[in-house]
Amino acid sequence: MDAMSLVYGDVVELKAGDVAGADLRVVECSGDCVVDQSTLEGDAAADDKGSRKHVTTDAAPLHLQQDPLRCGNIVPMTASILQGTAVAVVVSTGDHTLWGRLVARHEWPPAPGSVLRKREKGGEEEQTSLIV
Image (cartoon, rainbow, N blue to C red; front, side, top):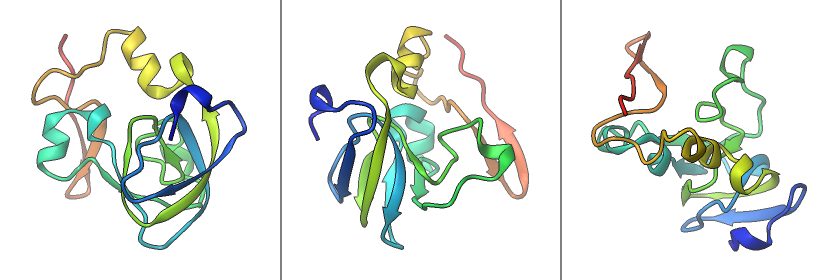
C-alpha cells in the first residue's frame, strides 16, 4: 500500500502481509483478520503478543472509542496485517494519523520496553507510562 497516494475517503483492500499506509476504519473483514500494532506500542507489547488485535466491523464500546489502538474497527498506520482480509476506508493520513501525532509529540519511537497504551490484565486495567 503506497502511503503517498492515499487520501481521506479512499477505499483499500488489506490482506496478510500488508502494512497500513494510513489510519483506516474497517467496513468489511474476514472473521480471522488480525493486525500487529507493535510498531506503535513498543517492544514490551510485541513480547507478550499484546500488540495483536482481532479486526471487526463493529463500533467500539463507548469507553474504548478514545483509544484507537483498542478499537477493533480501526487499523492504525504502520500496523501490519497478520492474517485474514479486510476492506477499509482511509480516515487519516500523514501527520494527522495516530503515528504522526505520536511523532509530533516526541512519543515515538517508544523507549525500549515501554508500552504506549492501557492493557487489560486479568480483568484489571494496568497502564505503563512512557518516560522520555
